[in-house]
Length: 205
Ligand code: ATP
Ligand code: MG
Image (cartoon, rainbow, N blue to C red; front, side, top):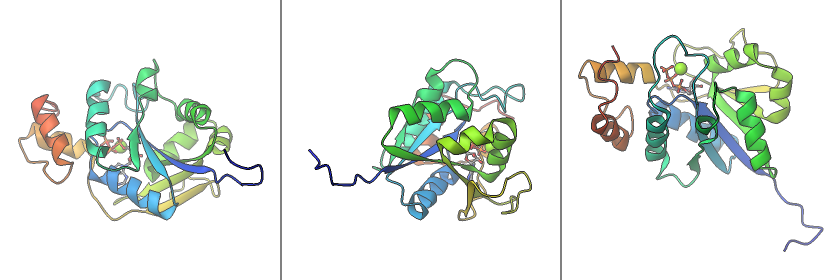
C-alpha cells in the first residue's frame, strides 16, 4: 500500500516497432542506447503484423518466426520484452493502434516510441501526427546514410538520437543468407541458428 502523499513515479516504457525479419544488432543497440539516454525502465519490442509499408514489395516471413526470433534475441536482457499485440491484431499494422493498445495496457506509463529516423518520417507523414504525439514521445534513431536533419520530420515532438554506426539491415542479412554468406555477429547467435533451423531466407535474393 502506498500512502496518499507518496508521489508515484510514472514508468518509462520504450516501444520499438519493426518488421524484425530478422531482428539484428542494429535494432538491439538502438534500443539499448535509447533506454540509457532516456532512462527507460523497459523496452517492448513489437513485431508488426502485415506491414503496410512493405506490402507488395516482397513477402514478409511468417509473423510467428519473426516473433520467435525477437524473443530469442531479447531473452537475456531483463529490460527487454516482446509483445504480440500487432501480430495478433488482424490487418495491417498502424502505429496509432499499437500505441493506443499499449497505453490501455499500461496506464501507469509514459510511452517512448523508438524507430529509425527514416521510418519515423514515413509514419508521421502517413498517420495523424497530432494523435501520435498525444500518445507517445517519438525518438528517431539515425543510422548510416541518414542525417539528423531529415526534412520529413516536424520540429518539436520528436527527439533524434545518434546510435553507434551499425550498418546492418534486415535486407542485407536476408541477402547474405540467400547467397550463403555468414550472418554471424550481425544478428544474435540464437537467431543465426533459428534462421538455419527453419531454413529462412534461402530464396530471398
Ligand atoms: P529492412 O531492411 O527489411 O527494411 P530493417 O533493418 O530496416 O529491415 P526493420 O524491422 O524495418 O529493420 O526496422 C525496425 C526499426 O529499426 C526501423 O525503425 C528501422 O529504421 C530501425 N533500424 C533498422 N536498422 C537499424 C540500425 N542498424 N540502427 C538503428 N536503427 C535501425
Ligand atoms: Mg527498414
